[in-house]
Amino acid sequence: MTPRKALKTAVEAVASSSTLRRSSRRSASSASTTVQQSPKENPIPNATTSSVRQLPPSTKRQKVDSESDAPSPQVAPSSQARRRVKAEPPAPPIKQEPETDEVKPAPAIKRRRTKKEVDEAEIFPPRPPPVSAAVSGGAGAPRGLYIGAHISSAGGVENAPLNALRIGANAFSCFVRPKMQWASTPIADTSAELFKQRVLDHSFMPAPAKSSALGSAPPDGFVVPHGCYLVNLANPDEAKRDKSFEAFMDDLRRCELLGIRLFNFHPGSMTAASVADAPVEERVNGVRPAKAEACATVASYINRAHALTRSVTILVENMAGSKNDTLLGSSLSDLACILSHVKDRSRVGVCIDTCHAFAAGYDLTTPQAYADFAAEIDRTLGWKCVKAMHLNDSKFGLGCRRDRHENIGRGCIGIGGFWNIVNDPRCADIPLILETPALGAASAAYAAKEATVKMHQVWSFQIQALHALRGTEWGKWKEAEEWLAKADQVIIQAAAAHAVKKRSSNQPTKARKKAHDAEESELSEEE
Image (tube, rainbow, N blue to C red; front, side):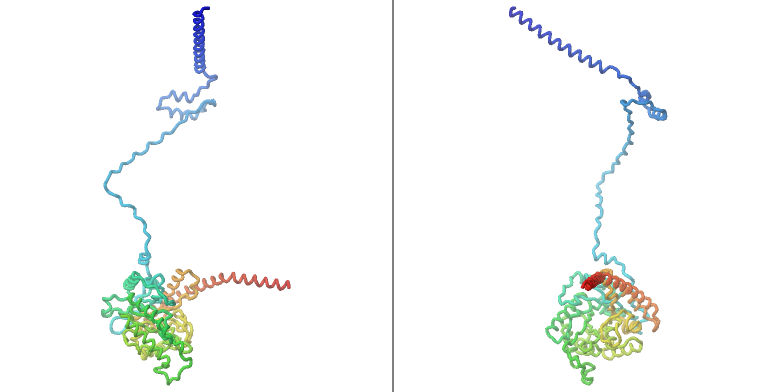
């Protein structure tokens, strides 16, 4: 075969194989189309679906509802029910707010009130009116009873007037420095200003413009702080006296800073005085020579204090006395001896404590006994010197020489002694201060704040009782007794709570003791 023929044969062979492949692909495609178009075996028509499809759109739902009661034909597992989707209601249109240039204020932020704002918003109990026609000085304006208590100044001296208001008082006493410490922290200017504002707002001190008005309250006011208990201006040791004088002056300067016009202190004692009493003929105006010398020493320090201050009137308090008669102020003669050595008599006076007077031997339980006591005051001191009183009952009897205060009407003085005082016109217009124990040791049954509230209740009832005594006849003090009974109820409840607390605190100790005794008995049996 020639090369030309061989090439022609090869070309024809390639062409024939390509045609075969194209024809095979065409036949496979047509077979697939035929399979897809063939009907399924045993088809089961869906009557519900076909009927729904034939109905117009407006009657589709009615037709379906009417046919729902008829038995539905059995549907093959391969068929799927048509799901109906409930159309959601259209959302309401968004209201467009008109655009304005106004700027809405930001919501107010709740601010916690300060302690000052809380105190000012507090509602205090009503105070008995001090002025009553039943207690009058004869000619002139009616005289008033200004009764209060020695209250706490914890948290700042500015809190003392608020505590006085909480017991319904119109007079009060407090400490302006620590009572049992030599060191003290200065009073802040803000505290001093707040104190002065509060005593003025609540009439504990007269307004400066009204102090000289006719018939107005005395310019000294009705606030009389108590001096530090550590002060002893009669101490024989000069160094100790000087230290006491520093604390004494600190008290006085604080009173001037606070605008207080009265200050009360204990005169002190002679620690080196002789124990044996001197003969009566050696006494000068009823005072032993050693004691008279100590009284002159106390007066010298009062003179020094007057030179260093301007406005405070210093009040010397009478004392209950002691067995060896070393305590100054145990007699009215002691007080008269001190005052006799003071140069500026206009700035000195006395404060009469009823418990101390009774314990020192001055009876004031009956009208006649009180009249004798009042006459002795007038003879030795003069009533003009009495610028304040401490109202306390006595736990022990007349002349016991023991300084133990008791609640009003519940001690050895009794309610009659206080009837004598509140109905004496000479006791009007001066601060009458309760120093009664109130709850006493039973205050430990409560937390500090609750104990303070209970003490305030007792003092409030006692103040009401004293006001109820004025203008009544001797022995007819039923209303006063009712107030004191309310105070007794608070005290009894506190005593019961305190007893329960003591038993619970002692119970572990008793249990340990019982276990110890049982252990010892077992050991003795083994032996």
